[in-house]
Image (cartoon, rainbow, N blue to C red; front, side, top):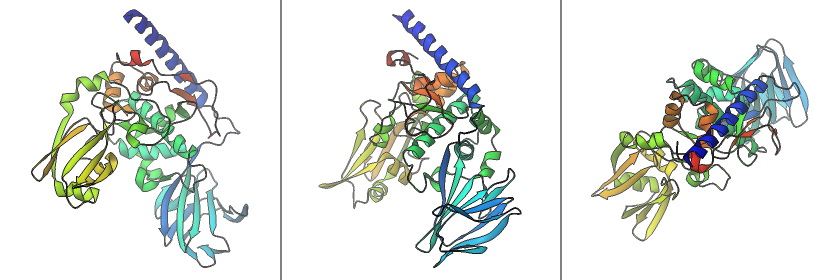
Length: 408
C-alpha cells in the first residue's frame, strides 16, 4: 500500500511540474487579440476632487456617449473636481458626469495626488463628489499589492506560489463583480500604484515568472488567500469566511504540525475591550464557533446575560489587533475581569501556509507541487484575459488524493 502511494504521488507530481513548465512557456506569448485581464481599483470615494496629471500622450472619453472628448500629446496637470453641470479638469466637460482618461503612449503615465499609476482612470461624478478608479492590468496590480506584504525575502519558489494564489483570488473577485464600478478598494488591499512595484525584485520576478497562471476549481478561479503558519491544519475558504462559494478543502500539514508548539502564543485583554467590540454592556460568557474539519475558530459568541452577539474572527482580530490575536487557532477562558487567549500559528489558516511551503521548497519541491498539496483537486490554467465561464482545455490536475496528501 505504501509503495502504491509513492508511485501515485510521483506520477501526480510529474504531471503537475510538466503542466507548470509548459504553461509558463506559453504564457510568454500573449495572443495579439487577447486583452490582458484588468482589475478596477477604487482610489478615491466621495472626494471633493483630486490633482490629476497625465505625462505624455493621453485621450479623454465619455464612456456613455462612447466618444473622445479631449486629447493631448504633452500631458496635462489640473485639479479635477465636480460641479453642477459636469466635471472640470482644466477644461469644462459640460453635461458629462463620467470620464475615462487613457494614457496612450508607451512612456505615458497618470498621477493622482502625486501617486503614479499604470493603466487608465475612470472618474464618476456622484452627488457633487467624485469617485476615481484605476483600471490596471492584473500583473501590474499584483506587483503593487505583493511588494509591501513581503518586504523580507522569502524563498523564490514560495513567492512563485504566492503570485499564483493572489492572481487566482483577483480573477475570482473580478469575475464575480463584473458589473460593479470597482472590484477592490485600494485602502483594503494596500494598493500603492506603480511606485510600490520597484522595491522588491523577488516579487517582480515571481509575477513575471508565473504570468497568466491561475488555479481553477470546478472550472473556475476561486476565492482564496494565504497564512503565515497554519499550526498543522488549513481550512477551506468558505468555512472560515462563511461564504456560500465553492473552494478546495483544507489539508493537514505535517511540517506545521511538527513545529506547532514552537509557535504558541498567549495574551489577555480586559472584558470591557471584548464587550466594546461586540457592542454589549458586559460579558457573562464566551463561546467559540469552530469549524469541525480544521478545528479553527470562525466566530465567537459574546453573552450579555440573556442576550448574545456573534463576532466573526476577522472583526475580532481587527478590534484586538493582529499583533495580539495572531491566528484563529485558539482557546479562550475568562479569569476575573480578563479574557485569556491561548493559540498557535499565525494567520487565518486558509489556503497556502507560508511556513510549510518554505520547508517544502527547501527540500526541493516546486511551486506546482506545493500548490497541489494545499489546494486539493485544483488545476493550473493559463488565462490571458477574463473569460465568461470556460477556460483553456490544457490545464491539468495539480492535487493529490487526500490519503496521499495527508502523508506528506
